[in-house]
Length: 612
Image (cartoon, rainbow, N blue to C red; front, side, top):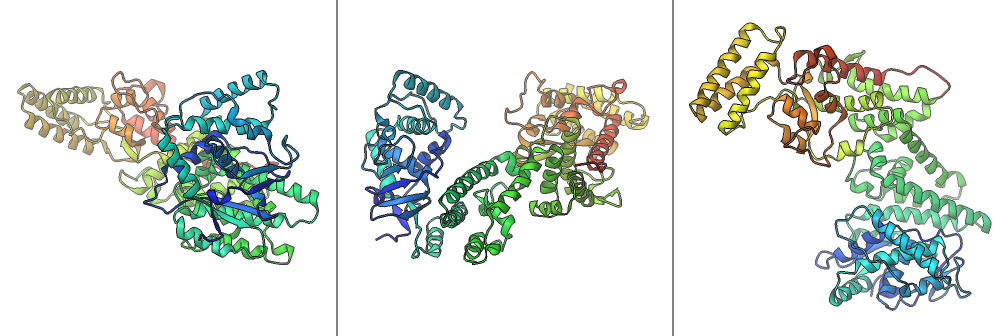
């Protein structure tokens, strides 16, 4: 027999779950319903003995009736799925929300009789805007033509979820539907957390480790949430208790939603797949309690559990302190300068968000705080106002670790200074697969293999030799390149592929020697997909591809061209009188290096004291 700390869904059939008035309404969105259905469907018995849902926190009222403290959203969605199957089910009883005297919501009970819009839900769908719009339009028609339907927010959310459930099963045959129902009833279980003296949190944690290794932290956040809820319901004053319950629910949902937003998350963290923060709200608990040892996945839960047992109010966990900490992060997120400085520190230095919070406590004003953040970056990249050796744009070269960090910092600084309405997209920059340090003037073109490719290479080199200014190359070196290019032309005319390839290698070697190809001022950032398309091509062709002007080659829709790279191929740093698009000249390189240095220096320059 299964331990009381877990319940199969079929074990809940026949139970009554009372949802009190302090609970917020049912608010699951389309994507959450879609994800739950997919998760249950994708669960395979050969890999796990059962699929585990997040904890259900209840208080026993009688043998078959429980007050539902936490888990209403999941339980309502499961109820709607069971309604679709016309299956035996548990009963939801409401204190409010247009219910009958017995607590039953008449709309929910009759939802299967309503007309439902038809739409497609593909497995790859990510944007549910069109689906939501279709349901909303149908809902308006429904309530207009049917006076018996009460047009309430709760009823709409019930209806929308039921529409998603119905359409999700559109492509299922009877056998597939029966298999899904069996998975739901028999192989889907939830952590059963009864609020009484006999419940054991240790048993809950042990079971969860045993059966859900790899998803534990997601549930730990829910267990921490349950500790706060169980503490709140001990408040003797009913009005005060209801206020605290509503406030806590609203705070939690808002914070959890914002922390899971990739834009917000990559601003405060350089981690995208950390098992210890699978539910991103756990980061707040780490900041509140400390991080503990890396292998101790339940450090925060145990800290909260121990603290809640303290008799003195001063030593007990304070939810307001946690929300205050979150509010600081949110404030920085919406302040462009603080956002860019914080993100730069998180992604480029050894300091984390905890360090930044400590600094914030020491600052007397916003300006002082921002200046302190600038000092962190200065001290990381500079020493006595001079660049550290590993970051000096005058000396660092291709394949040295400091190049990527300097280019990253430059792009952040450039966004802050030149794009006043923009926020640097840390989430895109960090999530893009494999960044490449790209040579602006190509390092080599020796991947060529066809005579027509050799001919194009010859044309580019001849054009470059003729365009080079006298101060960019000596007469002797110009003569060397001209002789090699003439020899290449002869080999091509005689259709000698081997000799042609040899001459191309010789030209590339001389180009690298004459033009210091690996210097910082000939480097920029490109994502791998774009790099593959522009690699080994001359500057003017690269320019057309990067700026989406090329007639033959298009960059991927999801490609991210950093603003600094756009500036390079637009030659934003080159004065108009010296502007040409054919090659990356010595003047272009020098101006580029200057603008990188000046932009970063401006970004890190202290603000003058003011009232902030």
